Image (cartoon, rainbow, N blue to C red; front, side, top):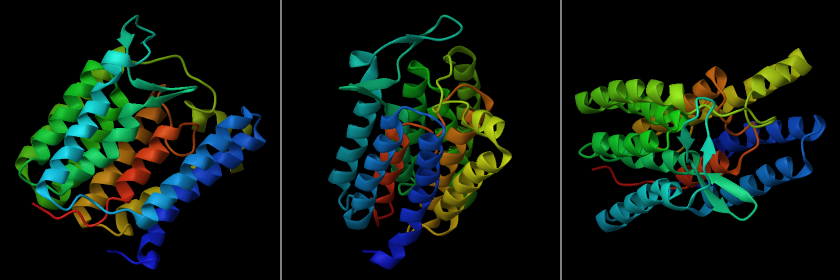
Length: 273
């Protein structure tokens, strides 16, 4: 198992952008519970990253995979519905009291990590996630899975994962055309709003997110394909948030990406298959 010192880059990858985002929200007039929610979830995620371990048997890995896919499917049965700007039905959230959990941002990081550690099933796992995202529709999860596939392919050169990335890109573009919702302050349009306030504030948020991405890519205590898969997923979420009205992970308000990447970063040393 990684030592506490080895886990510090993963902790920093989460803490730097989340703390920067919380400070921005607190100083910019966001509802008080926005920053406190993000910070509370960060504390829980960091605790898990310090003590967590990955599934080390085939049965436990399959059970975790099945659980993640069921969670991702759950909004279709129990989630609140919204209507996109094009009039289409959008279902991406699991109700948790006063909070609606964005299931894609919670599930996708661990899903791509399992795909990265299983070369035989990598493409089917990613395709299953893309199919569920298409049902919701959720271009954010679609692009996250697509760029995770690109990251895995960069390391493994698996042609099946490469084809999955192409399929994912086409599906994600389709989802982005029908699944856009009106923006919410401090959730979507984070860079637009922060740069409009101050060049310094916008740059600080951008650099904090870039630092988290770099730490995920090069320093997290995981295998190279796992690091590239997680970094690809983060890049996909950020890319669609910059192009359209989708939640900005870590620096914007939202428990799901903090919990999701925290969960994945605590799944240490999953055996490769």
